[in-house]
Image 1 (spheres, helix red, strand yellow):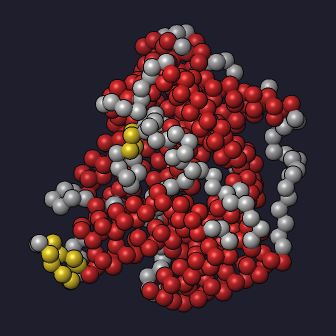
Image 2 (cartoon, each protein chain N blue to C red):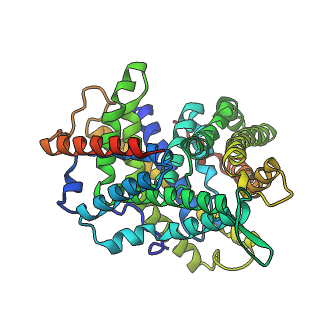
Image 3 (cartoon, chains in turn red, brown):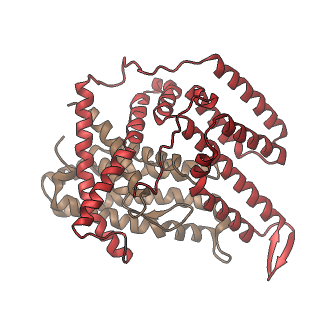
Amino acid sequence: MNQSLIIGQFVPGESLIHRIDPRLKLVIIFIYVLVIFSAETLLSYGILFAIAISTAVLSRVPATFIIKGLKPVWFIIALTFLLHILLTREGEPLITVWGFSLYDQALLQGLNISARLLLLILMTTLLTLTTTPISITDAVEALLKPLKYVRFPVHELALMMSISLRFIPTIMQETDKIAKAQSSRGLDFTTGPIKDRLKAIIPLLIPLFVGAFKRAEDLALAMEARGYQGGEGRTKYRALTFQPLDLIVALVFVVVMTLFFVTRT
Amino acid sequence: MHKRTLMIVEIAVFATLAFLLDTIPGLQFTIWPQGGSVSFAMIPIFIIAFRWGMKAGIISGLLFGFMNMLFGGYIVDWFQAFLDYILAFAVLGLAGIFSAPLWDAVRKANREKIISYVIAGVFLGTALRFASHFTGGIIFFGYLAPEGQSVWMYSLIYNSTYLVPGFILSAVILIIILITRPKLLFKEI
């Protein structure tokens, strides 16, 4: 169960991309993802791909990791492309095989959507490969700070995000343990008709819920024992600082984005 | 222990549980490769909504959607991402409207009331989630509709295939637990 799912795929390193302030990385990714959907010309796609590829190279993350990270989505990208080609009926037919026509607009739209998906996933994968989940939540908290003034619980939300992410492997292990324990008692939830499998999952759910409540209670107790009392006046163990390097990265990004907007349409 | 600390931690832990129930192969049944699977994932969100109320439920749903998006979301547009991953999961928490009367019913062990409030809450949450996916489907995935089928019919069928079983599973399991072992989920805080 554990091997088939890779989550939290951070690859430790000291590369340029690893060292960029997570707040800046998040802002860059946000803008990047935002503009992906406005790219229309070949040149603008070229710029977006150039950004993604140079980020990948600069991150010094082995290519195999990046490809592995993209593995689950190849299928979706290919499927999207195929569906677009087969189902869109706009523009001029290019070729006709067995009564099926390939339209130029269909090809264009298919390529458009697939390229956007690929870029989107490539960039976000690079973010999670080079940034720890904790840094990401720290950055989110820092970036959302202004919302505090409208009484939005920024600190609590960031805390919940980091607890959630931190507990993914833990709860996954627990699920695995319970699944094995119940299998050893003769439960079978991996074969057979769906109805039987769904029924078999119930004896797995109940201990999971009980375990989750217990875990939450223990954690809350441990937090309070260490003096946790809400967000006010809490200091950080890892304080984020904006370095000269970040300024350079930000400037380069602004220049590239200007280029992008010039070539966008 | 402060109630608030416990609430914060429970919201987070149950959101993770929801995400894993939706992700671990073997525990969920993928129906559509583009997203949409029959699973028990909504149950933890409903538990938080019923136990702590609407606000907590909404936040738990938000976290669940956020993780879904972060680890393999299917995004073609900003507004679609908002509809399919933010709004769709956040509205599950609205089941928490029935939190207070459900607590009351559980304390009094009133079987009929427990059943009706759970069904009402789960239905409200799932229906609103459906509305969100349905709208997104019409706006962004209409081109996938087979020839001769209207766009809204396609979205209706697509989203019902996993949400109707999801609704039934969630309601049945929550009712069974709350009638046989209410202390499991509704331990006094």
